[in-house]
Image (cartoon, rainbow, N blue to C red; front, side):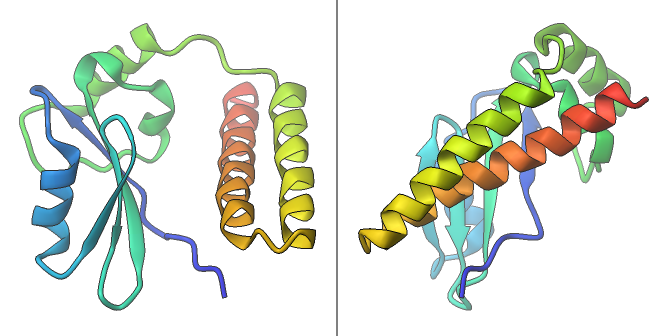
Length: 144
């Protein structure tokens, strides 16, 4: 059974953060913290529940996080984060290009499953999910 996270954390910071160290602090001593990119980790708890965390400085904020932004703590307010996101983010990507990428990754998933390369299929499936979520954000942006 494939489980997806219901929680994606996008942490906006003023200073640089060591994502792995912070992931261990948040997940606890028994959590498995897997780096997935610069400033990104997946935290896997002993229960096998997992959640991704993306740490980035205010100057690298994407405007798309504003739609469902919840500020938990810190000194940055919504307006500061929104303004930074508008500076950094370009225009939304065309919907047909996003769908095309998702389709190419989905074909890759099918090929990997047929070859019994399940870990690679899972990796590609995550890319399909990301493109479909991006598709949803792009559609929401164009329909405002």
